[in-house]
Length: 238
Ligand code: OAD
Image (cartoon, rainbow, N blue to C red; front, side, top):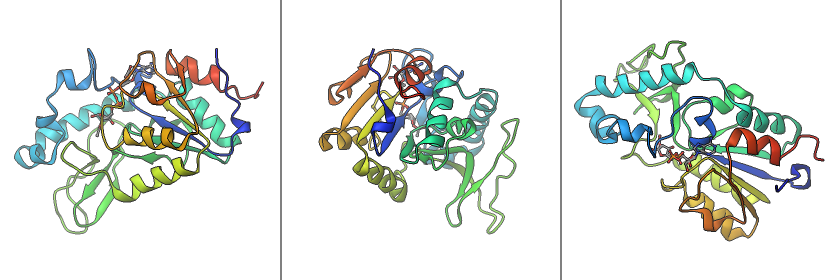
């Protein structure tokens, strides 16, 4: 079993996808039982759907929020957060919108696809909207009364340029890149794996299955995130 000594690296990026939250009880998107096998994204996860039936789109996201609120961070999230507390050079870039990295204690998480816990006004930008039961607290912008939408990067949205730039910058400075639980099926996020690979730095894929991006990685840890992350990046550096 490969072991990586994070104190030997100046800058480390953990790039995470839905698989890191699977053992917390949050379903992944693809594969059997995945969110996109139960819902058509064309009806719940695009601006076009929000224009046609905003209530249906909000209900979908409220259901997701209620589910995620009941799911605790697992040892993979917690281990990465522990590493961040003892190593200033660790950056978390996530495609997840569930906020579990932050609940585990991670800071400065780069959220490529937004957050279930924020709403967004086209004029006035993102705003927090946290609730314990999942229901949105407000549906109109307090500044201009416009209807608010979830601050999620939907299928017909572009990834926020500043957020993507921050992710690219973190990878440009990294000497170790670790992808955890992503199918690498969604772009431009998946392109960040190529950015790391092209730099020639150490790259590690943690995933029980091979993915379309597996060939880009130098090392493959085939197993569950909650097992592999603590085992392969031991805190005592031994
Ligand atoms: P996917 O659902 O596409 O892929 C999840 C990956 O996690 C798969 O490769 C699984 O093999 C792996 N996996 C499952 N259980 C795991 C475990 N316990 N430990 C480690 N890996 C595990 O999710 P993403 O790649 O994150 O976009 O999907 C990317 C984007 O597509 C998401 O951000 C979402 C979706 O549409 C938005 O919400 C905007």
